[in-house]
Amino acid sequence: MVNVSNPVIIDQEYCPWNQCNRKVPSKIKISNVSFKNIRGTSATPVAVKLLCSKSIPCEGVEVADINLTYNGSRGPITSQCANVKPTISRKQNPRICAEPAPVDAPSTD
Image (tube, rainbow, N blue to C red; front, side, top):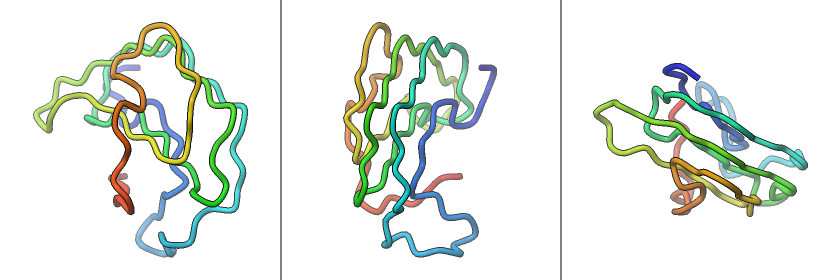
Protein backbone atom coordinates (compact mmCIF):
# COMPACT_ATOMS: atom_id res chain seq x y z
CA MET A 1 0.00 0.00 0.00
CA VAL A 2 1.28 3.47 -0.83
CA ASN A 3 -0.71 6.37 0.67
CA VAL A 4 -4.03 4.46 0.43
CA SER A 5 -7.22 5.74 2.06
CA ASN A 6 -8.77 3.02 4.27
CA PRO A 7 -6.28 0.25 3.44
CA VAL A 8 -8.14 -2.40 5.51
CA ILE A 9 -11.90 -1.94 5.58
CA ILE A 10 -15.26 -3.57 6.19
CA ASP A 11 -17.85 -0.81 6.52
CA GLN A 12 -21.46 -1.92 6.86
CA GLU A 13 -22.37 1.59 8.01
CA TYR A 14 -21.36 3.13 4.68
CA CYS A 15 -24.00 5.59 3.51
CA PRO A 16 -22.95 7.68 0.52
CA TRP A 17 -24.51 11.11 0.15
CA ASN A 18 -26.82 10.38 3.15
CA GLN A 19 -29.17 8.43 0.88
CA CYS A 20 -29.84 5.73 3.46
CA ASN A 21 -30.79 5.34 7.09
CA ARG A 22 -27.74 4.65 9.30
CA LYS A 23 -30.04 3.60 12.14
CA VAL A 24 -31.19 0.55 10.16
CA PRO A 25 -28.44 -2.10 10.42
CA SER A 26 -27.29 -4.04 7.39
CA LYS A 27 -28.90 -7.46 6.93
CA ILE A 28 -25.94 -8.80 4.91
CA LYS A 29 -23.83 -11.44 6.68
CA ILE A 30 -20.07 -11.05 6.28
CA SER A 31 -18.00 -14.07 7.25
CA ASN A 32 -14.66 -15.77 6.63
CA VAL A 33 -12.65 -12.71 5.59
CA SER A 34 -8.85 -12.53 5.93
CA PHE A 35 -6.58 -9.50 5.87
CA LYS A 36 -2.98 -10.78 5.83
CA ASN A 37 0.49 -9.39 5.13
CA ILE A 38 -0.54 -5.79 4.48
CA ARG A 39 2.26 -3.23 4.58
CA GLY A 40 2.75 0.38 3.59
CA THR A 41 1.28 3.80 4.25
CA SER A 42 -2.23 4.99 4.95
CA ALA A 43 -3.57 8.34 3.72
CA THR A 44 -6.06 8.31 6.61
CA PRO A 45 -5.40 8.05 10.36
CA VAL A 46 -7.97 5.22 10.63
CA ALA A 47 -5.99 2.60 8.73
CA VAL A 48 -8.04 -0.43 9.80
CA LYS A 49 -11.82 -0.10 9.92
CA LEU A 50 -13.94 -3.16 10.73
CA LEU A 51 -17.49 -1.84 11.21
CA CYS A 52 -19.94 -4.69 11.02
CA SER A 53 -23.72 -4.81 11.29
CA LYS A 54 -25.14 -4.74 14.80
CA SER A 55 -27.99 -7.03 13.74
CA ILE A 56 -25.74 -9.62 12.04
CA PRO A 57 -22.15 -9.22 13.34
CA CYS A 58 -19.21 -10.33 11.19
CA GLU A 59 -17.84 -13.81 11.86
CA GLY A 60 -14.57 -15.48 11.01
CA VAL A 61 -12.60 -12.27 10.39
CA GLU A 62 -8.84 -12.81 10.56
CA VAL A 63 -6.25 -10.03 10.73
CA ALA A 64 -2.58 -11.07 10.55
CA ASP A 65 0.70 -9.27 10.00
CA ILE A 66 -0.49 -5.70 9.41
CA ASN A 67 2.21 -3.01 9.34
CA LEU A 68 0.89 0.38 8.24
CA THR A 69 2.11 3.88 9.00
CA TYR A 70 0.42 7.27 8.79
CA ASN A 71 2.48 10.43 8.44
CA GLY A 72 -0.38 12.92 8.24
CA SER A 73 -1.33 15.64 10.68
CA ARG A 74 -4.78 14.37 11.76
CA GLY A 75 -3.59 12.33 14.73
CA PRO A 76 -1.96 8.95 15.29
CA ILE A 77 -2.68 5.85 13.23
CA THR A 78 -5.65 3.94 14.67
CA SER A 79 -8.22 1.24 14.05
CA GLN A 80 -11.99 1.19 14.53
CA CYS A 81 -14.04 -1.92 15.21
CA ALA A 82 -17.71 -2.58 15.90
CA ASN A 83 -19.67 -5.82 16.09
CA VAL A 84 -16.69 -8.01 15.24
CA LYS A 85 -14.26 -10.14 17.24
CA PRO A 86 -11.44 -10.78 14.79
CA THR A 87 -8.75 -13.38 15.22
CA ILE A 88 -5.56 -11.33 15.46
CA SER A 89 -2.05 -12.70 15.00
CA ARG A 90 1.50 -11.58 14.38
CA LYS A 91 2.38 -7.91 13.90
CA GLN A 92 -0.38 -5.34 14.26
CA ASN A 93 0.37 -1.72 13.55
CA PRO A 94 -1.95 -0.06 14.32
CA ARG A 95 -3.25 -2.18 17.20
CA ILE A 96 -6.35 -3.85 15.82
CA CYS A 97 -9.62 -3.25 17.67
CA ALA A 98 -7.79 -1.64 20.58
CA GLU A 99 -10.65 0.83 21.07
CA PRO A 100 -14.31 0.47 20.09
CA ALA A 101 -15.71 2.77 17.43
CA PRO A 102 -18.07 5.46 18.72
CA VAL A 103 -21.76 4.54 18.54
CA ASP A 104 -23.37 5.90 15.37
CA ALA A 105 -20.05 7.35 14.19
CA PRO A 106 -20.42 8.96 10.77
CA SER A 107 -18.42 7.42 7.96
CA THR A 108 -15.42 9.49 6.87
CA ASP A 109 -15.52 8.29 3.28
